[in-house]
Length: 307
Image 1 (cartoon, rainbow, N blue to C red):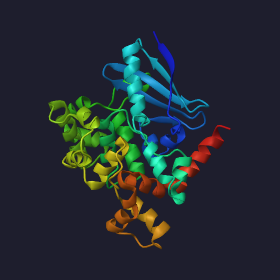
Image 2 (image 1 turned 120 degrees about the horizontal axis):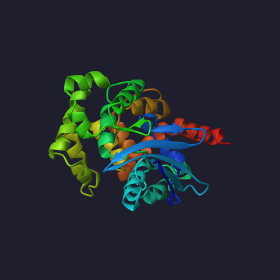
Image 3 (image 1 turned 30 degrees about the vertical axis):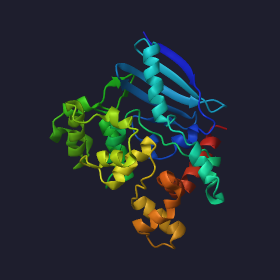
Image 4 (image 1 turned 60 degrees about the vertical axis):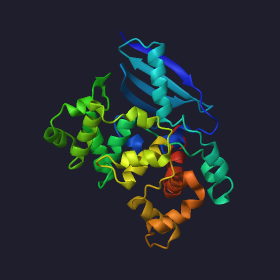
């Protein structure tokens, strides 16, 4: 028997479904599946006993329309878990009011609040975000897309889709076979080790995800894991809603060199000085500036496709 449920998730006035969706490249990575014409995001869930396919869209008030399809009954407990995952996907647990008040003090940055930027599309779990971040290091974007597709093929099938594999599912596969199946290369060892740390209890990702401790401690905890350097650790923080780290990579340097340094690649120190005045929002404002043209273009295209 197939179960279906629809519910509405209210959102704050500074939230934009499309701006969050296109905040970075995660929307292109399996198991996310985005329908640009109907502006609907699908995701197969396998979390804490909840197995279902969720579809996410939005209404005229920018509230999120959540549709749940499952072969199992969806009660209050299941729906609560699904709602929790949706809040993480769209960063709705992050308050960005201070960000918008800050950028409105600088006319050249007020477009950030006008487009309601500030939230990053995240995976439902920190585990998935960390694995995907490893899959972006020293590699082309097309290869990253392929790796994520390969990874998802290893996950549990639900309603014709495959979920992102759990740490247990990864750890059960021999490392050599895992590397061959995913095409992760040297990164396979890091992902495999991360999975084993989690299932052994040596690493508590839920505690890490819920961390309200000092930012430096959180950054250091991620940086201590194999496969995570300053850029990748900073990227994980960014997806978590922590933006004090700049997470500088070649994309950032190339964009800023064209915009502000007459084609000369800036040093890390120059970039840090440029965004220092923004404090804990430095990394986010840098990312918005780096991706401004492509992001606004994607937002306009998304709007036109639905008209």
